[in-house]
Each structure stands twice: as structure tokens, then as C-alpha cells.
Length: 196
Image (cartoon, rainbow, N blue to C red):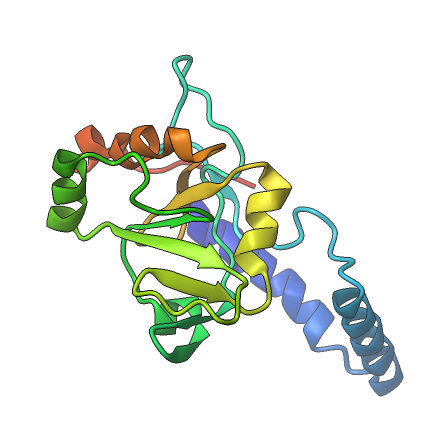
């Protein structure tokens, strides 16, 4: 499978960086990486360890094209959710998830909300407000998700159970379309293709 081959190749490359046998070179590498992270100097694209899916269940426009971050692997970040703090997958869990900066139910009719509940699609608000404590509030402790939304110019993203992004919405007005877009394709989809 192309995704596995890509992951193995990148793992070997990272292993060469991580396992530097020279203590002085390793210390220099560590200091540089910490300084870059603290200064927010992480070059675009560096968070993408695996390739981008181009086939399968993805949001597409009328021409069949996708827009960033569709098909990309969503980053893992530290969050607080319903009183628990930890990495997103451990705290929020795994499943089809809408992350939006606004009201996750904005513009969704009763039929759509019922369908979301039926398939287990979680509607969540991502925020950096430390006081947020609603049942649907996910506090983005390191602004991992909020920075990705801002970088790609979207207000919401629908994340698949495998943590790949199904698609994004530039505004809350586009939420109903984004949420219902996978409705017809959840029963069967072609195997995903991956580009490095």
C-alpha cells in the first residue's frame, strides 16, 4: 500500500535524524528544534509526515478537485475536553468529527442532526478559551488545530476516523454542505491513493 511505503521511508529518514550518534551534533539539533518550536518557526508542510490522500472519501468541488487541507493527516494536539486533558485521540476519542470555531450545529436542520447522531458524527467547537467548558467545547491548549484552520483559511474541518481530513468549510454558512457531503459515500469508496 502506498501510504505504508511512504510512512516507512519517512520513518527511516527521521531515524537518521533522531539517532545521531554524535552527542554534540544531537545537542545542537535539539537546541535548534526547541528554539524553532518556541519561536513558532515550523515551516509549512513540516507537520505532514504522511502523504496526502487523493482518492477515496474526500470532499470535492464540482470539477472533482480538492482544496487544502482535504486529504491531509490532521495533526495531534493537546486538548481539554469534558474535564480531561491529553492528546486529542486519547481525550476526545476516535470517530468522524467536525471541528469548527463557531457553533457546530449552526445551520444544521433536524434531519441532518439526526443523521449525524445516527452515524456518530461528533459536532465540536474548537477554542483556545481556557474557560470554555461546554459539552461540545474542545480547548486547543497549544493552538494546534486553530493554527491549522487559520493557515488553510477555513473555519471548520471534518476529520475522518483515520484522522485524515475529509474537507473544510471557509465559513459557518458552508457547514451544512460539509457535514452532509460524505452522506452518499459512506457505504463504499475506492481505495485511497497517496501522493508524497
